[in-house]
Amino acid sequence: MANPAWKVAADIAEGYVMLNPPFLKKYERHEVDALSKEMEKLTRDLRGLVIAADDAEGNQTRNRKLLRLSQAAVVLQNWRIRMPKAPG
Image (cartoon, rainbow, N blue to C red; front, side, top):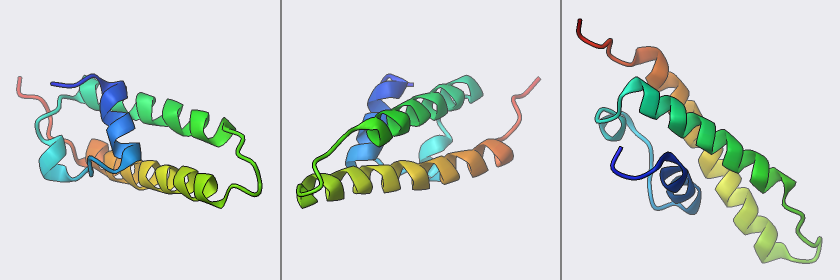
């Protein structure tokens, strides 16, 4: 993985990276597992973030990040199921 898993997870949350099969083809199983763990950790951190009820923009930003991470988790889970087997 060119970037650390925590950085890729943060980029997914910010919307800079979209997960799809061509993007995931370059990663090995252990890298995909590390990315999955980092995405779960970031999701937990975002859910634990307390934002004032009158801060509409802050709530929207948080919810957008959670939505991106949730959608990426579904793509990642499906990729892990269909992931090509290692030769040998």
